[in-house]
Amino acid sequence: MSRQVSFDRYGGVEVLELLPAEKPVPGEGELLVAVRAAGLNPFDTKVRRGLMEGVFPITLPSTQGTDVAGVVEAVGPGVQGFAAGDEILGSTGRRRAQADHTLVPAASALPRPPALSWEVAGSLWVSATTASAMVRAVAPEPGEIVLVAGASGGVGALVSQLARERGAVVIGVAGVESHAWLREQRIIPVSYGEGVAQRVSAAAEAAGGRLAAVLDAVGGGYVALGVELGVAPQRIDTIVDFDAAARYGARTDGGAAGRTADVAAVLELILAGRVQFSVHRSYPLEQVRDAYRELEEGHPRGKVVLIP
Ligand SMILES: NC(=O)c1ccc[n+]([C@@H]2O[C@H](COP(=O)([O-])OP(=O)(O)OC[C@H]3O[C@@H](n4cnc5c(N)ncnc54)[C@H](OP(=O)(O)O)[C@@H]3O)[C@@H](O)[C@H]2O)c1
Image (cartoon, rainbow, N blue to C red; front, side):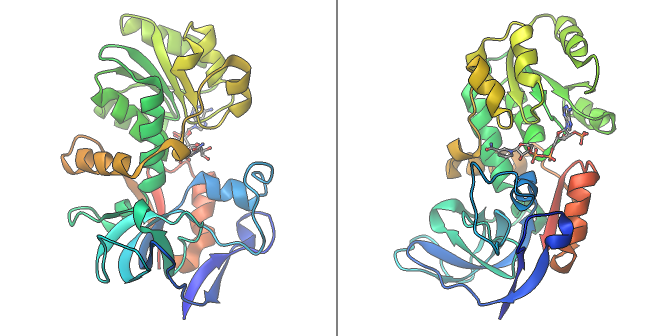
């Protein structure tokens, strides 16, 4: 037997249950994985609250979670390159990562480098694919000034560092608790809230130029802010504010435009010590409600991870 996180109605963390489940059977091209770590994403919360119904319909009861790392227990027909006993990180594709066992398409899996902790491995995929696609969408050139909204988040912290690795000067909007960390990463911190446009403008001027691109992992006005500050809409990418993107002609490249090769490239940067990807806290799978409470209310800097 196995256990899986499940909810049978839309709502807050109180609808989450850890229920017994059959061990899944791997189909064509799939790996059966004994889960060692499964990271949380805000997407899970949006789906569970029923906020994605229009764009991402689900059936209830529903399982939960995308990011995962674990040990391959069995492989389905047609799988090449993986075998029982392999340690992998990946993406379930079926929103069933938060469980003792899950299925991962072999095409969405990579070997876990021994130096990478289970917690980091199990929370990397969505952030790495999304951040890579966002940076690719606006293609920052060396010396260009780039704004990242949500620079302390799971996606934004990677976006900021990947843009910096391309030689861009990065201004990162985040809560003040993360400003010291952003400075350590050579990212210019700016607080959000009233007056953010003036602070961003002043930071760009102090950096010797004007904004060339905006990477928005927050929504709520950063696309419009970029346009107001003279950024060409095709050099603005948002993964949240799709209405503003449609209104201004901005880009919306995110997780769906990510590739397995993107995760491999991010892994190399992490292992080389060039990029940081941090875990804030791990919870046992039984404490799934506490874990989401922290994600939703706590402003954690770094991922929150469930450990079966
Ligand atoms: N479309 C896609 O493909 C896709 C893929 C992945 C994620 N997403 C979405 O992207 C968003 C970010 O995901 P995530 O995993 O990075 O979330 P996260 O880890 O919770 O990070 C959220 C970030 O937003 C910051 N923030 C909150 N309010 C802000 C404001 N008014 N201005 C600027 N920053 C603000 C937070 O800063 P502090 O904590 O420092 O206050 C934090 O850095 C979520 O809405 C998620 O659903 C979309």
